[in-house]
Amino acid sequence: MNFIRTSIYSGISTAISLITKLISNKIIAVYLGSSGMFLIGQLKDILKIFYTISTLGVETGTTKYTSELKNKKNEFSNLISTTFKIHLFSSIILMALIIIFYKSLVLSLSVEIEETNQNLLKYFLLISIISFSIQTFIMSVLNGLKKIKIYILINITATISSAISLILLVIKYSIIGAFFGLIISPIITLIIAIIICLINRPFSLNFINSIFKQNYFKKLSNYTIMAITGPICLISATFFIRHFVYEEYDSNHAGSWEAMWRISGIYLLFLTTTFKFYLVPTFSNLKNEKLKKEVFKIWKTTLPIIILITALVYFCKDLLIELLFTSEFYLINTLILFHLLGDIIKINCWILGNILIAKARTKSFILFQVEWSIIFIILSIIFSNIYGYVGLGIAYFSTYLIHFIFLNLYFRKLLWKS
Image (cartoon, rainbow, N blue to C red; front, side, top):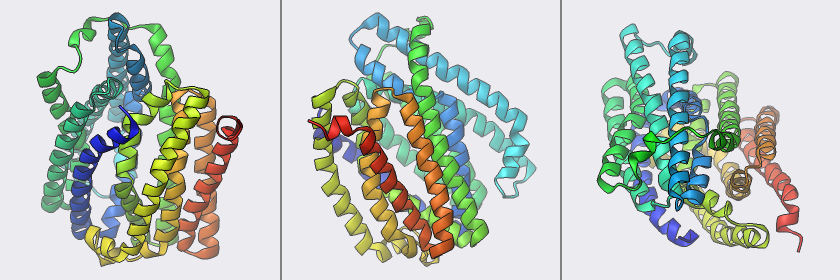
């Protein structure tokens, strides 16, 4: 399946996701305002860390090795058996830790929650963690098998169901409803994934009886470090900067900064969904000149698309702010130009970053993730002090420009030498 065809299939899922995100963002903005957007941003970052740890970060490795071993029955069964057990046991260990430190977690959310709701949230959070881990396992195997249609069907159904539940809970219970809505989303997705897989049977369930293979665990552990380092660096940086903006300015500025990231996430969804399906499985099977040609082919496709999208977003920014949020989020206008320019470079960075993942270059990947987050934090503080609120947008653009230069220097032999 080539990049264009994968893009067409993923475009169906993306269109549905865009619609649901447009509606849910609007509801959150109207009912919770910029301060609510700030709190949701903080909770989402905490949940992302939990979900990443619950899978032990092996989903990318699962996709890669599933793609390579799908025609070798015994090896394939042993691989996904090992992967399933990793997901199961890592989520159980994390659940135990959350039970122990739950009170500290609640305090970190900076919002008062009644004791009854605290207990209910805890139980849903524990179920959510193991649900996310298992549904991620299922989706990783489907991705590796290139069962894109089934993957998309699960994604669309889960996206719509999760959005409806989130919207209803926000309208009914305000911020605490939003917390519940975010937490139960993986539970809904797992139920839908199980039902669809039982109907379509994309792979045999006999793997449950297969043994845990140390050699596969060792191979997958290379991806563990990368998969955990990436999100933790990103989340730590955004969590820190969001809190810095809240302390330096106020919740309105912090909420608008979070809203700008949400706009970015919406219009980049088409490309990132395609990348998820295509890049790692494809890059893992290519070397040298073939890999170089594939990278340039993808760049030629994505660069005009991202420039067109960002230009449309910029010229329609006032309409988008009113459509997605409310006039309370007018501060987005201060950030949007430099954020859009940063996103153009960001997409090209992601393409090169996926080569590191596909080739399991763990040390280099970690170095680049740490480099990005440190530069982003430092420049955000410096430029904010020099230029004010717009400095946060300048820092975002500058960070990705520097990051892209470093990546090109690293891949100079592959990309720029004959």
